[in-house]
Image (cartoon, rainbow, N blue to C red; front, side, top):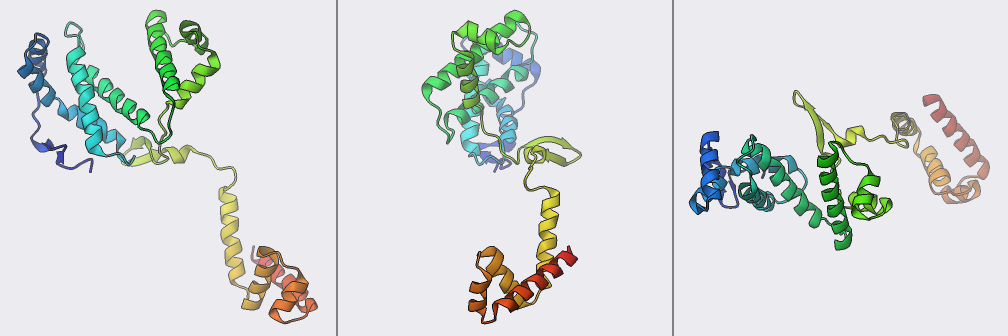
Length: 256
């Protein structure tokens, strides 16, 4: 769906492309109140929105919704871009589009975060940005706490609460077509390769037993029955159950 030609009624194959010179001209006219120049500039940069929403593929989000939200970020970029700065418009617009989409995903997350916690987190982020500009480095949590008046613990909890959940299948690195995903970086201390291989070997070893031996092990070790209960169920003596059980276990040990 992220590669479809039409999105939100817009034929992406026919989207215009603007040169840097044309963008600069349209930005100047748009900031002077020219509504036609503003519309042309927005339409000429819709490809930026498309490129940004590609990074959200595979998350189950409707691309039409993301495209519309991204367009809001693009419009904000058009209206707020400072033409006096020696910065390309796309360099300024992409973070604006990305931020708008991330904000939308946070606010519409299935894990609901209270408005007061979100407000605290946003104030902490604003304080962090202001302090970064002032100190020319990333501020510490303690400095953000002093700036906002919130406790260190409240700030940490609020910032963690608004972090967007990441899919285990989110690609984090790609080299020559071979992608590395989040799940590749997660360690499982319980289901290790050794235990997994042991499980396979055990299954193969059990498959070599006859049906009576399999049934005895099933009743004894999977259903927790005593040898007396097993003997009554399958119609043989307890001594025979004990002998067959020991023989089956010995076969499995040899296989392993």
